[in-house]
Image (cartoon, rainbow, N blue to C red; front, top):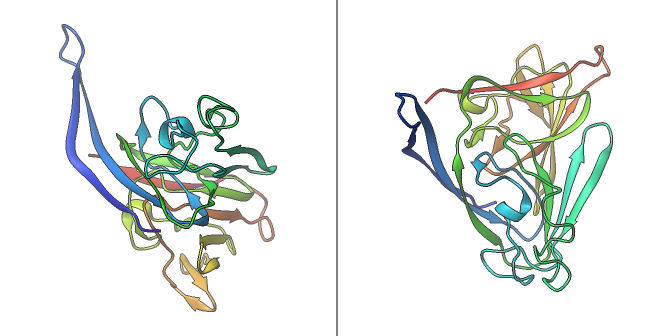
Length: 238
């Protein structure tokens, strides 16, 4: 997935009337490129007015171009413990004015969540997302027992062990992580709790790298310990 991003050192400052209270937010934009066929997509920005499909991937004409999803684009949202309960399809405007079959509001890509998306054309689908970066000392992305489809809360890319902003090294023994590439298909990683590292193909500390808008499946194991809610903890304080 070819992704480029520029996170500003721009600050959006709003002043409340007749007070000295200020709100400081880091604002950025991400140029998104969704490849043909299946991929896992996440949005690590808080966009306006919301993070629904209708905002992030507007489909106002029902046909393929470089700023809207093409006809018959598919999006699947995952519910832990239940599977793919919600799906959405891009249709013609004659069927729905929003361009999405059920309005595009049934799926929201909030920071930390991810979806499967199918681009039925041979060229990449592109768009630009503008929004604010989530900030805080302990940003917890819940990893429930069983399968979770997630992405980083923060707009950062790199190795999930060595990149401090997105470090994911607090797993349980033999948790699993699956990344997906439309050309290479699935890559499986096993968590080694003793080394706080991920293993792939018998190689310990094999880098698990993600791009800014790339999500993945995480399996919170119940095989060796009592099933508990785990959390991917990230921190960013501008």
